[in-house]
Length: 145
Image (cartoon, rainbow, N blue to C red; front, side, top):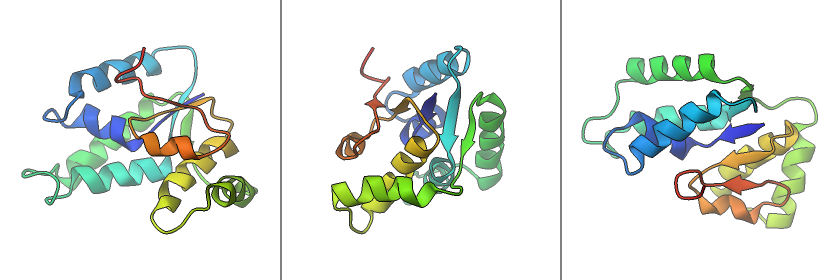
């Protein structure tokens, strides 16, 4: 299963973002492929927070429009949305302790732990910070083939 990180969702949604067209293409190809594609709930929440933020975008996406985009995304995800469940804390522990996490790093650890917990094969992300976590493979489809 492939998990999609926030940055790819934002790039695909906002036309002024670098890699906008490439992000749209790789996401469309992924959801049309046989391997299931999913998104962690924290990435969905972060997408909403980023695209609607007037500190980031001069003309932020209105929340209604952003929620509609999320609904379209959820309908296209063949692997669903990843959420915490019974046993998730153990997956987080296996990631957090070896990485000696503190503070804001916990958000990325949560995403990585959800991926491990749900047996994700690879997390697609343009964020190199995920490389600090053991047991999660990361691929940047925007710059890598």
